[in-house]
Amino acid sequence: MRYLIALSLFIVVYNTATAQHYKYIDSAKVMGLRSYRREVKEQPESRLVEIKKYIPGIALDIRYATTNNFTHQRMYPQAKAFARLPVVLALKAVEDDLKAQGLGLKIYDAYRPYSITVKFYETTPDTNFVADPRRGSKHNRGCAIDLGLINLKTGKDLDMPTGFDSFSRKAAANYPDLPALEITNREILKNAMQAHGFKVIATEWWHFDFNGWQKFPLLDISFAAVD
Ligand SMILES: [Zn+2]
Image (cartoon, rainbow, N blue to C red; front, side):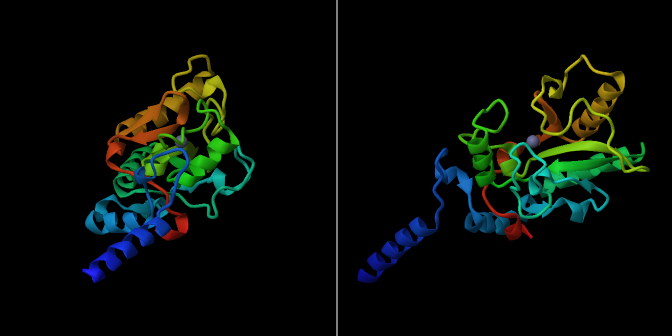
């Protein structure tokens, strides 16, 4: 009996010491590394994977690993892109379709640890522009991708209505008053992504959520831990 009491006391103290506390959300809603590893052992098909390993031809411009982003700070230690395995397999199908038209994808952001979403909010506390840390972002679930199109022959970006992370009204996914070429390119991206299970969000032409994101919890694990 004394042993059991000591053991349960140890478990309580240990869990309190290791569990992360979050300011804006019920901390139980954000999965840390220990729970993530346990989940992945049971459901390896839902794990985070590095996108480049599955789609070697994909272009990356991971803005949050540079100072070229709205925070003007380097938020990621590595310029890498990760997402849940089913998301990456769907993205591969998009890439295959586009390749036939001489086009490729360029990723700006994918999986984002929850604690970075908190940092974004504390830099820019306006939920019209950044994800609300009370709900978290689909990026935190490994189920959202920010991306644009490139010409495979030249490697150059296709003309789009705005740059990535523009706070302009022109960034809206259906904004009508634009040069015809920008609308055409935006629609090519949208149609290719929608054909394989992604949905654009109304305010950002570059942001796509994976249908079924509800099944994947918010995560707060570092890039280094995924590798
Ligand atoms: Zn996004």
